[in-house]
Length: 120
Image 1 (cartoon, rainbow, N blue to C red):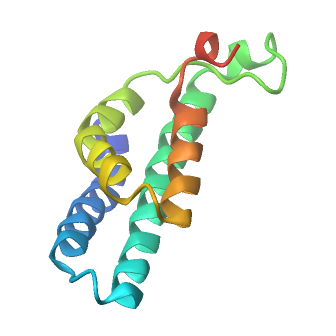
Image 2 (image 1 turned 45 degrees about the vertical axis):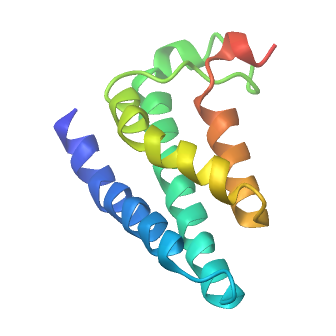
């Protein structure tokens, strides 16, 4: 559990820092804001992939019983990473949801993190 969190900590820190940086950028500087938001989106996708990969590996025995389009619900310690990232992800969604790369990252986040019963 602590190893997975240690793996995620650089992305969590970068996500927090980039969101703070985006908040300090003037709206007149679209190019800089866009570059920062692309990095934010990348970090959201990295964190999501870490959580999904761990869960898929941890639940490999039950994967054979499911159809290929249904993921297992996230398990600990993946959930701890999502809980740690959630406040920042929520800020990103409400503040920068207009940006294409953020929309794609949030879509990936939601699809990969929701439990299977929510995707029916």
